[in-house]
Image 1 (cartoon, one colour):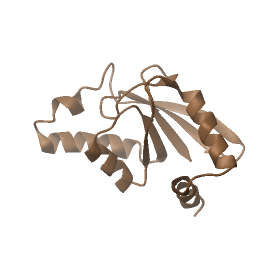
Image 2 (tube, rainbow, N blue to C red):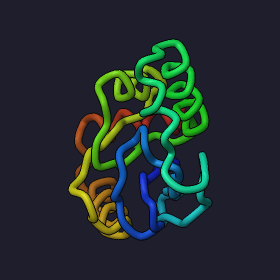
Image 3 (cartoon, rainbow, N blue to C red):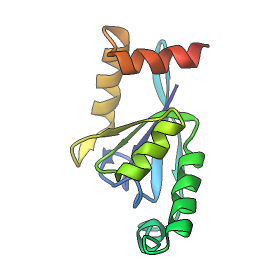
Image 4 (cartoon, one colour):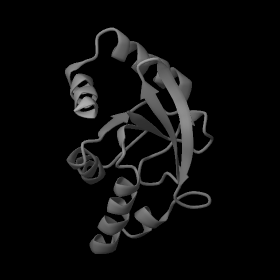
Amino acid sequence: MKIAFASTDGVTVNEHFGRCNQFVVYEFKEDGYRFIELRNFSEGEYKAIEETRAFPEIHNDLVWDKVKALSDCKIIYMTEIGPPSAARLSQKGIMPLKVKDGILIEECLEELYEKIKTAPPPWLKKLINKKEE
């Protein structure tokens, strides 16, 4: 199962889903997790989504492009996300998780790994079971 983090520095979760120019992607397996890649959407802050809000068709296409590019991830951590973007992620079977700005990615990984190993909540069990089918 792949997990993505909205991060400008690759160390902390510190960005809004739409504005984020890169996502740090990890893979979870039964024996732990490992870094896979950085997925870049632009150099510097990704302003295209915000700048096209007055143009719904273009804006929606840009959001869908980002969602599609992350569609192999089952969970995405971010500091903020708008309701339409959250709905699009959910439609693709991706769980958006808002966390406190500046939390360490490693801390999120450890907490998630512990939940998976001990007592995953229903939403996480569902994601794990989908992966195994």
